[in-house]
Length: 415
Ligand code: AMP
Image (cartoon, rainbow, N blue to C red; front, side):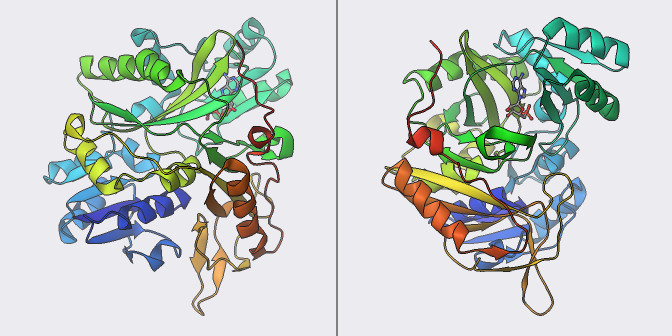
């Protein structure tokens, strides 16, 4: 099978590694890809969020499957345009991608499907925002209603900061704060059948001990030694299947990757958010542990044959990824710095580019990540940090506590 992979971040590098490891894949073409992906796939230029450009490229490269990594192309309708050419696409239609593209729409679906989530109000002016903030109380949670590349959410004790964020965004969802450990669950679905991947945990705040502003994600690990045994079954029953059924009922089935972000609260699991694609950086750790060939799995979801797919197989042990971020990230990342030490297995490129002279340069906020597996979480953590220590990038920073609380048994799930 020939696979066209759309995107060029760390998630796509991890997807590319999984796709080339599938014996049924004879070639991966990544568009636009990145210097890390360049080592394992052919790169093509494309405007990733332009449906007709991606569909034309899929035809030109004779793709049997198009895997769409990021949310913006999905929301723009890239999967629809590819399917209109008769080519299988892994990723939801534009209509179904609204589960991620609009927080208000996601809340509407959750309410209709009876899915447990935070109570919320959509607000467009200062007065209604203030009322909603006071109804729910501190800590305040204010979310940009549209796509914001993982940076549209402010969680704060400071009411003025919450109001200021709402004013900057225009249309926001103000919601009740959910306390409890967070879990990311990826579910591969063809709209009806659904296969959960291993639950993972990511680290949204920029600093150790969950300090500082939210980011796109500073690291992740899987599996979760502290997760209650029935968690995945419960989430499939109470969240995933009701959501998929509601999307079918509306005539806009969701096929692709449903990312369920959860908080395990005293009242049970509550949905924090849905995404319509693989999460970054959790993909790096989840796919590092997946033994089942990736392209076959995604092709089954893209062609409505997931019910006939064999059960997923997983490697023993654990995986950890640690993100190396540019100076100034997340507020104003500096780019164009030289990176050395990145040319090793386990280094996944997220925001890099090649200079004309061949030097590797930083080209984004999250620059790369060190991803490693090990027989247990502590071993995987050591190996991931060893990778990160080998990278040199002026002014870069990373968290030093990725997976630490889990390794030390400090995560408690409320009864
Ligand atoms: P989101 O983009 O919706 O995932 O939000 C980013 C991060 O903000 C989440 O991973 C949580 O850490 C935090 N967050 C979002 N919504 C809530 C909430 N209702 N209660 C507590 N934390 C939240």
